[in-house]
Length: 432
Image (cartoon, rainbow, N blue to C red; front, side, top):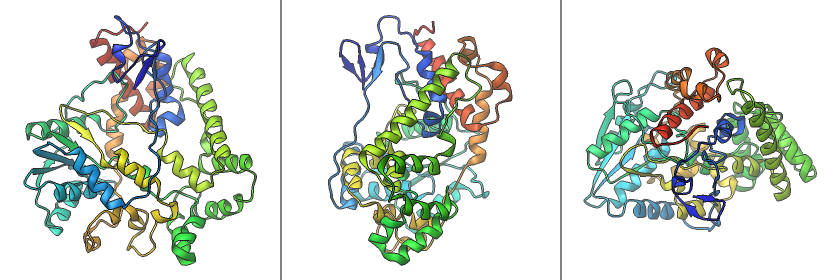
């Protein structure tokens, strides 16, 4: 939602931006400030004299999680005679697919997967095929080739798209449209909402016992501050609120203690983005201190907020039941320690315990044991950020710094801004 200076609100910022909408380059520059770039959120409206209205979280409300998830899927797919589900081979999208099949009745369900290769060389499509066969899922499976099946994502006035593989996602959306899908669901948001945070040994011990906490610490040993960080978090509980919040930030986000915007931003945008990032960090730490959060509570909060809803990539409506208000309310009521279960077979599954709870009993044997990462695919996509003529001409990006930039995260955001600016110009925007 957006608002202008007169208090008028609209979901379409162009309604509020005047007859000749003017792009706010300073706002776009904030996308390259470390908190926004790595947190994947849009800090401000990309239009002058138009402001973003932050999305509020629903009030936590205890409910049976599986029932709440089914209800969310049912509501999102109401009226859709053909339902598409984006599946990756992971647990989150599998949960969505299984619940769609549960509520579909006689409606057609299409699972769409892009055959990316993960960092271990495994095919995403092969993993999906194995799951569909092992669980005997009555769904049509469509496999897309990431090299061949690419499309231009739909432009939205709300701001640049922050999905890592926009052309791949747009191709999936186009395939869903051609197959007659009226809704395309995904597992977006599950990790941020239900993933086990760092520093949660005490919370896990309260819910799963000392042995469960020991297993949790072992599983977290290769993440962030590791086992030592878990021990320090226990001691930090004795600190005053402000000191505890500052210590949490230093342990969890050391590179953000004094964030600096990347050199690809031209001045004065780089200095302004750096100043904004430091204010954002100070405000976030102060909020943790004011709320008296433990390190685990702070990490869980930082994973979820600020949250960004990515707009549809094509002509089919898109949504995630994990981000549906009804399910959000139920998930927010869960104790943090319940997000972990020491009795599951692998660290990946133990840290996804609440997602596995959404699945039918007896399916654990068929589930993937590890999380897939697609660094190579992201690296290839990042190369699109090497050329940003509109950004350079507007004075937003330093061409010399861009030519030697190696950080994929930076290049992905530059590519997103360049694509969005091209669309804005096509829609009659002014870049002055």
